[in-house]
Image (cartoon, rainbow, N blue to C red; front, side, top):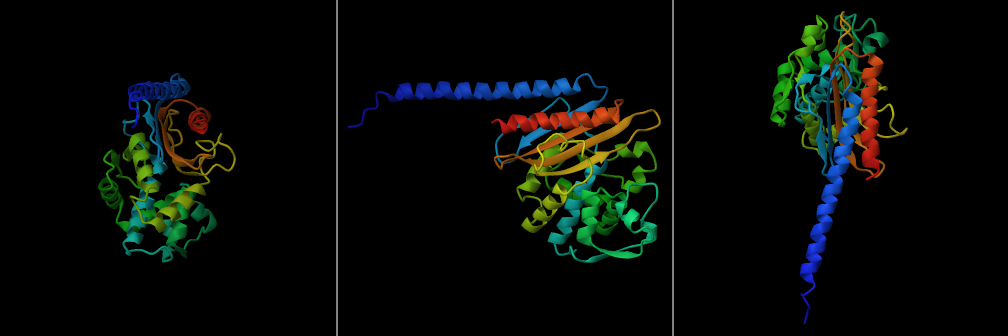
Length: 304
């Protein structure tokens, strides 16, 4: 006959252990929040930070995690998702040629495509156009993709239908280059950025093939080397998309952003989004804030 008399004591001890573990984890998370706040508190800028475990349960945000802020080129991630959705539907193909006219290659904008093909009048596979737009943040490539799928309205509808409500896209790159005020037309929150990154990674947004293609493209990103990747161990897989506004005539930085999915040494993943908005700090200070936050978060998870 089994003896059940010791069970209440075992349950009591287990309860105490779980309470202690919960308190310990809470205290650790609070320490991390304090360290992140210490990085941003004395800066003349609005800084939003969200961190979300993808295959483990953890989320935290600072006070601006729900604040809608300008995305700048971060929106090219959302555009790529909408384009690849058309591929998944069979309406587009990654290997289909896209004709690029010289008139498509606007001057006075960031465009590695224009630098390589200054005279235009070339055909480029859709897959390569997406890579230029995401990994190299080509502005002309971005607007070509938008025209291909029917404009910003198509992206707005697709992203909203995927459960992301705090997201607005109204201006393409050409429009944003007409004045700094137009850079405020495209907004989202760092919390919603993380939710989209998490759902994308989990295969809830695109097909398996399209998800793999875009993940690989984002890992190959060459922009933003001073942001979330800057202080991480060499070789750490980081699938990310950056955004930068530069400074206006008054020295204001409208946005210095980076969002991404980071792979830890143990193989687990987390999403991180950092938006630095309306900053009067130097570009070096803005990007270092992002890099410092990213490093602190990576170290926190690596020790767990």
